[in-house]
Amino acid sequence: GAGVSQTPSNKVTEKGKYVELRCDPISGHTALYWYRQSLGQGPEFLIYFQGTGAADDSGLPNDRFFAVRPEGSVSTLKIQRTERGDSAVYLCASSLSGLGVNTIYFGEGSWLTVV
Amino acid sequence: SQQGEEDPQALSIQEGENATMNCSYKTSINNLQWYRQNSGRGLVHLILIRSNEREKHSGRLRVTLDTSKKSSSLLITASRAADTASYFCATENSGGSNYKLTFGKGTLLTVNP
Image (cartoon, rainbow over all chains, first blue to last red; front, top):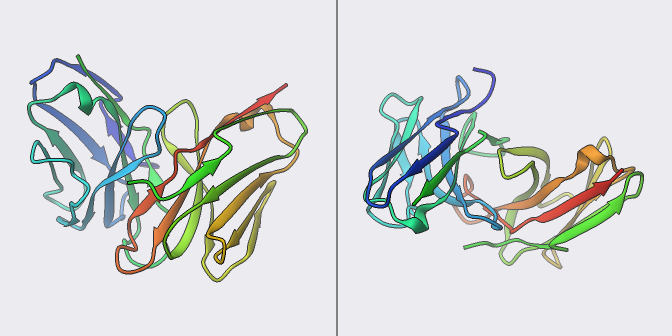
């Protein structure tokens, strides 16, 4: 596609439920990133993929959060046993390569509300 | 954790005026980038300035970088109502994690018609 595509755009879930958020990066981009943005804050880094592997998952807040990118393209961010504090916009981004200076392109985000 | 701090947090101006937003950061960087965000949705990349550059222009945007003061400014000239958005600076820190951006909290710019 022309840009980074994220689905769903909005998700309301009950506390304790499992959630999956999907990201379809720009075709040909090997680097993929997940960020989380809480209300009134800037985005915060969660995880970075280079190809299929998670090169840096140091931003994942705890073991309820997990992300995969099995074929080096689409990525899924998985959140288990959701908590109200997980409510945020989850932003996916991609770039041609994670090395050197590359413009990073962001998707429109998935708004997650945990009630 | 957030590295950049934008100043002011909110700015309201009239159409046609210039808008200046500042960003300060704490650690050494490879580059600094400015992004725009409308209504909490996706971020749009505006401009990137490398650590060895002092000034960069793109259309109505002018970015400066002072690495000795660890600060940057974004100037939008001849503002338009459509420039209303949140603006974030993001740093790519030196020292290994050069794929990771660290964002500030943003400046909310309102341009009144």
